[in-house]
Amino acid sequence: MDIIVDRYSKIKSNIDSAANVNIIAVSKTFSFSHIKPLIDHGHLHFGENKVQEAEIKWKEYKIKNQNINLHMIGKLQSNKAKKVIDLFDYVHSLDNQKLADTLANCEKVKQKKIKYFIQVNLGMESQKSGIPLSQVDDFFSYCTKEMNLNVIGLMAIPPNDGHEEKHFKYLYEANSSLGLKDLSMGMSADYLKALKYKTTFLRIGSLIFGDRANK
Ligand SMILES: *Cc1c(COP(=O)(O)O)cnc(C)c1O
Image (cartoon, rainbow, N blue to C red; front, side, top):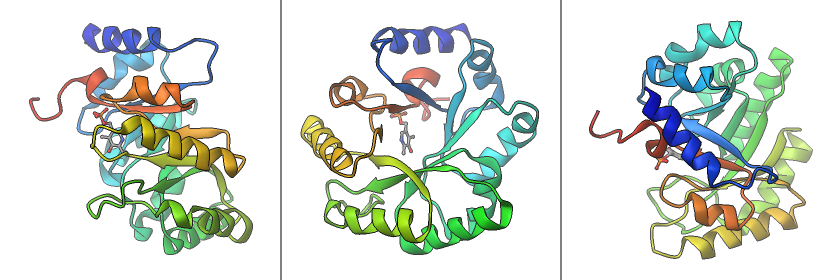
């Protein structure tokens, strides 16, 4: 498992230590035995994309280790909101009004607040989640002013069209115009490009844990 820590350290060495950049180690599909070496190395941010998988993997450990930050990065159904508020510290996939309503209600009931990114569908791709860039202002107002959710930034998975930088630039600009300081962009294949546009949360899976398809 040393290779996991080695790969993580390599990524870390490509990030300016003065910049405010967090690596989210996306551990979906990998067991806790792959994750533990990173925790022992001092890493605290982990990402999962399925609520049930995350519960099985993390619930017990996190109760005893509250310094771990769990990030929900996958498509989220409103009926999972309660479990999400219990287990996660960040949601990166806030993308519709019903979900915002349900999460806000669960926060009230549980007297707990977490952090949110609004997911934007930059390329208007039908297979990807997220709201269109043109609706970000209105949805942001709704989430923050009416639902009182703590939205800290925008998130996107850019289209795989060879123009990732252009998309990262759009997201950075939209984020700045809302006065937001955090940005969730950059994955294994494009994180160096995302760093150029001041991302603050990289979501990196395969470059740390290895290929998910060939396990
Ligand atoms: C799986 C996943 C990642 C990590 O992808 P890699 O290419 O393995 O780094 C990042 N973001 C989201 C939303 C994901 O589902």
